[in-house]
Image 1 (tube, chains in turn cyan, green):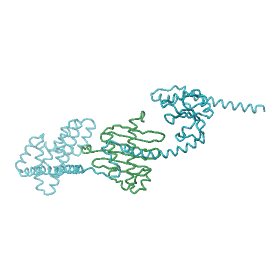
Image 2 (cartoon, chains in turn blue, purple):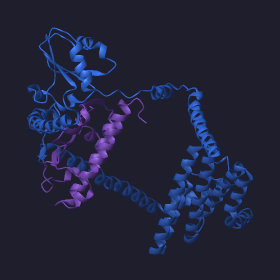
Image 3 (cartoon, chains in turn brown, yellow):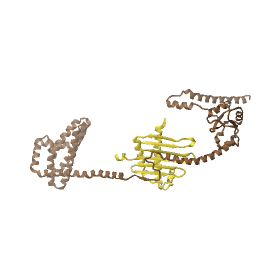
Image 4 (cartoon, chains in turn purple, green):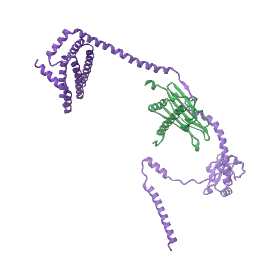
Length: 383
Length: 150
């Protein structure tokens, strides 16, 4: 009796401060001490839960669940996950029972007492308490006086077990319904909508088909092009005339451009170009009518050579572009190609190339300035 | 997920006209086996037809399907869209699942043309989808065929 009294006093003193004490221990880094403290606290709360009234019992239950949760957190931080999970489970169960006792206490006081005694008995059984004598006395009380209440608690658990599967059934049925709805559209055949062409499962593309049609359209467009070419022919005639063109006709179809160019080898410097009308007729277009006339006089060959006349029948089959005098090709430079190739190959061009350009430009600019100054001095120097 | 993967997919887009330089067009198609075919023809300045083929990974095909499904083009209809005319013609053919559509309309210059039509919302969806598909196709062709695609 004397032993129980100081224990009660110690429990009351420690109850409101146990969470702060645990936090202090954890902050100090002593997790083991915190765990052992919580375990002893759990034991105290368990013993108090057995011998308390309904109101205090609920409070003790909630505190016990909180302590167990804290202990589970500490065990998980230590890496003991199995113990942690076990403690969390006990914590949630104890919390639920405490709340259930609250509901029961609101209904009737007599039943409350019976249920509280029964539940306390259930809770104390799995736990090995430090005071064996107290545990034994509690067990004997439970077994002797309240066997009916014990049976009623078993019935409650059976009811819970029965309820859970029925709750799961509608959830399971839902995906089946959704699956059926997914399957339905597959049965429907493919629908075609729209005014466009359907080329699915055919190798040719739409544009491939259109080629045959486009050829007919090209014929009509060729007519338009020929009209435009006639206009250009007239403009070119007025611009260049026809006296600078020689007609080469009556030679063998196997004759080639290079062979024709050899005939006019002496006139290469003055500039000319061979343009074909058909397999047996070609044009030698010179830059000036005088060059054409001179070539016509000097060149001798087996086939006929004549100067193109304004009223020549051959003009009908010659396009306007062919009457243009040959223009000299613009002077080319390999600098752009060299720069691109060097860049793609990851090489660096010699800097002198660019530097020399800039230097030349700068030197030219300075020379211009100096020459202007000299001119001014020459003009006004006498004054 | 399995149902989605088994879904059929085919997409073809054509825009072109017949004019001064012949039949000029741009056409590309995504086929089920992952082949992308691209054709571009213009005779302007004596250009010749360009034809290219490239195979795509399933990830790219999946992205193309996502672009099409999120645009909700399959819910539209081309009855109220402008008919193809002399200026040009556009065709968009899509097979996605059990749906098979082939819409045809005239060339769209800008969104103002969409607003002035009888179905502004549907035509705008078509306009933006075609823009997205062109960007995707040009990027793929550029990445695969150009020496320096960036």
